[in-house]
Length: 240
Image 1: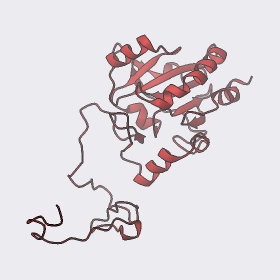
Image 2: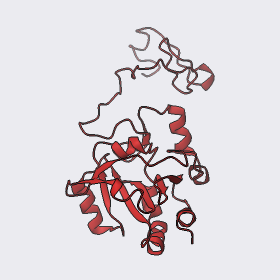
Image 3: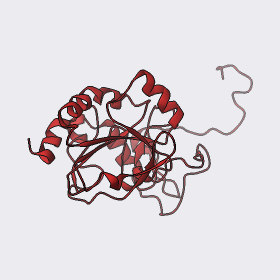
Image 4: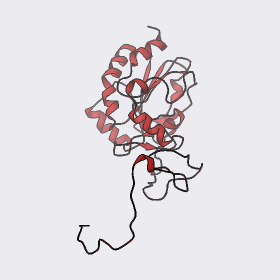
């Protein structure tokens, strides 16, 4: 209101302080700017601003972009601090194998869908040959930036390594993926993670997350971001 507005003096004066030093956890221990106190387990956000996911949406994953492709969404298993750390980390950190599944972990069993809705069990590939999985979305700029490196890696290693793009179930459908691929084809298949099973199983923290599995089905590389050295990661599992 203006300085001389008649309504200016009506009501209760509430001081507003937004400096980081003034941020404290409320009685329910929800700090705004800093995660000073851990929220009690099992509780959810206050009702204001909390949005429900549609049935079948990817849940319990790590950090994925909002459905409009902007910002980040944290889901169960990740704190806000961890989400922001990944969001602002440089590509060298994101590709340093400190996110997602630990190196040496045996790949989990996951069933996805092809773009016709037919089930595809990843065990048909995993444990039989090296596999590269990229958690991917049509709206992901990092995925777009990775395409040249992945195309070059596929041209070099595609006869030995199975490449699969795992389309996350956020703001895209098999139909929209088909339309996107008609104009922007990939040299390897895209499978759809409708219920978020792969996001959960592989602890995918973001789109552009890559997992490389060796022939025995064990994790040999994880990374995310636009500047991953995919060729070197594949050399380690192929041996050339």
